[in-house]
Image 1 (cartoon, rainbow over the protein chains, first blue to last red):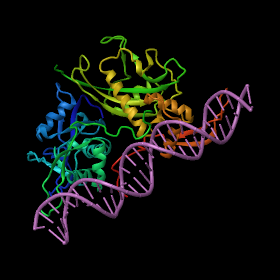
Image 2: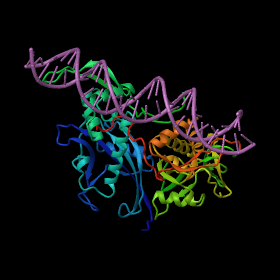
Image 3: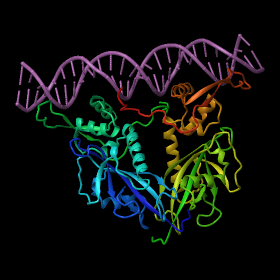
Image 4: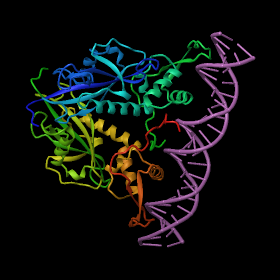
Length: 230
Length: 230
DNA sequence: ACAAAAGTGTTGAGTGTACACCCATGA
DNA sequence: TCATGGGTGTACACTCAACACTTTTGT
C-alpha cells in the first residue's frame, strides 16, 4: 500500500470500575459507536486527529473533554504506537494510544453515542482497537501491584472493603482485605484519615476511612531483587 | 507554531556494555554526529523518517542496519512518543523512540560519523535526544530486576563474574555474585551448561559456564504483592 | 445476647542479603 | 603449598498469604 500523506491520531483507553450493583459490573471501557462507514456500527476508542499546535498528551486531554469531564480523568499515561500501514483504510494513520483512569463513583454525562462497556464482554470493535484495550488492561493490572495507580480508580475517601472491590475487579481475582490493608499501609500507599464510616444497615463495626497518600503515580515496590547494597 | 505538514521519525537508543578494560567502560549509547545545520556537530540517536510501507518497529530495524549489523541487535522495544510541536525546527516531526540492546563482546563496524559514548558522559546532544537516552536508561534499569532482559546484553555463553560486571554496570552499583547466581538460577533466567571455563593466568578455580535460558523478553518476577490466591 | 462487619495476631512459606567458609586450579 | 578466584552453606531480615480470633457496632 502506498500513501501520499500520513495522519496522526490519538486514542485513549479509559477505564472505570463500575459499581458491582450496577448493570455494568466490573471493569469498564469508554467506547463510542461509529455512525459512518467504514465499520459503521462498530465501537471505537475516544480520540481523534492530532492538531498542529498540541502534543499527544494535550490532544488526549482535549478529546476526552468532549466525552467525559476532564476533571474526572485522574491519570493519563502513554501506552504505545500502532503504525501498521494498513491498520485503517484510506489515508495512512498512525495512532498513539493512552491509558486513562476515572475514579469509581463518577458517572459523568455521556454523549448519546458513547457508553461504558465491560472489558470482559467487548462489543464488535473497530479496526485494531480491541488490541489496544487488551494492552491497556495488561498495563493496568501490572501497575496495580507495584505502584499506587489505584488512586486514580478510587474515590478520594473510601473504606477498605470498597478498595478491596476495586482491586479485585481490576486484578480479576478476590484480594484478601487483611493483607491488602497491611501491604498498602506499609508501603505508604494509603493513609487512615482517623474518621470512621457509619456501619451498614445490618450492623457491624464501623470501618476506618482511608485515602491515597499521593494523587500522582509513584512506584512503591521498586526492586524485587538486586537492590543496591546497603 | 503552525505547520503545514507533519513528518514521523523513528529513533533508537542502542545500549551496549563496554569492556571494562576498554576506552569506553560502562554503559554505552550509539550516537552519530550531525554534519549539517541545524545543530551541526551535535550528537544524534540513530534513526530517520518512517517510510510509507513500514511500521515503526520495521523502520527502527531498517535504520539500525545502516549503523550496526542487524543480527547484533538482540532486543528492541518501544519506548514512547515525543510530540512537542517545537521539538525540532522546520517541519513538525513526531518521534517514536525505541530501546535497542546489543550483546557485550560485539564490536561491529561503525560508519565514520558514528561512535559509542558512555551514558555517564554524554556529548552535546541534538534536540531532545538526551531525554530519550535518560528514559531508555530508566526503562533498562527497571527491567533488569524483574525480567530476563540481560540476555540481550550478555554473550550467549558466559561466566558468572562476567555477568556480574554487566549487571553492575547497568544498575550502577556492585552486585553480589553469590546472590545474583541464586536469584537468576531460581527464577530460571540462566542455566548452567555443564562446562567450565579455563581458569585465568593467576590460577583460581575454573568457573562454570552459563547461558540465558530464553532469548526473548520474559517477565520473571510478575507480582511482588497481591498475588492471586491459591 | 446475637449476628454482622471490621480489624488484629500469629504462623509459615518464600525471597533476598550478607558473609563466612570450602573447593579447584596454577605456579 | 600457597595465593587466587569460584562456589556453597548458613543466618537473618523482610514480605506476604492464610486464617483464627477479637473488637465494635445495630437489632
